[in-house]
Amino acid sequence: RTVIKFKATKDYLTSHFGENRAMREITPGDADLFRLMLKERGLAENTIRKHLSITKQFFTSAVRSKLLEENPFRDLKSSTQANPDRFYFISRDEAEKVLEACPDNEWRLIFALSRFGGLRCPSEHLGLRWEDVDWERNRIRVRSPKTEHHNGKSSRQVPIFPELRTYLETAFDEAAEGAVHVIQRYRDTNSNLRTQLGRIIDRAGLDQWPKIFQNLRSTRETELAEEYPLHVVIEWIGNSQAVATKHYLQVTEDHFEKATQNATQTVHDRGCLPRPQNTKTQQKSQLDNAGHTWTSVQVAEGGLEPPRRFPSSGF
Image 1 (cartoon, rainbow, N blue to C red):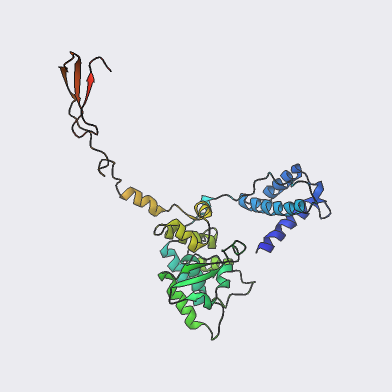
Image 2: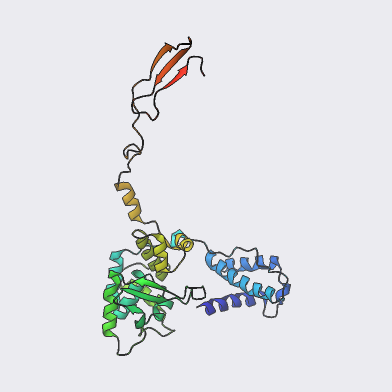
């Protein structure tokens, strides 16, 4: 998939600038026009930024190879932005309908690995092997091609969640003797799982949600974040806290319902501070041995400070 994305960016560049255009001739102004061209083609903002990010990599490589003095695309924004409008929380009820509409048990497992395991599809699904499933310790070793170039991120451990175990056991019982990979039937690179899942969702009588597989991961991470510390959740899901907060964790309707149903205790109800008293402060004047007049101020009952004495002169 990375190669496909890089090739798409290359095609946009050669189409816009021409295959024989020397990279050193491209200016920052040309880079701005390239961005404008992508926008005029109707590409989404994040898609444009992804192409610009890849373009930066091409030109940065040329700079490092001493083919260019500077990268003309350097100042263009290329970090993707979170788009809350494309968030969608797949409820348990919707998940059950999709599972019932799946054509076979292996498809049910594919869906369950995404919705209840939080795996990336298709890379982590297709990389999953039976030797990675530790039945005794109730965990799965998930190989992650997307993060394997980072130190210590080639794989991660994911619990066999109760919602996932049934589908995993069924697939194991149906697997052929000596089967290596957990997903067997849909390993063909021409199998477009995203398109197929869209048809399954239609068959279930539901509207297709945006970012079909990513929102399954997003939904699971949001659920887990309600029960476990965030550092544990991101270890299971395989992203960073920054990415989780920006692109995965959702504010759901349940959050609003809980907020309106549970009355928030006031500070005084929790006993952190005393309740204010309506009693008026009582003042008494008296003379000390030196003849100075002092005013004794008594703080209202239950106050934080003990009674204090101040001279009538104001000091």
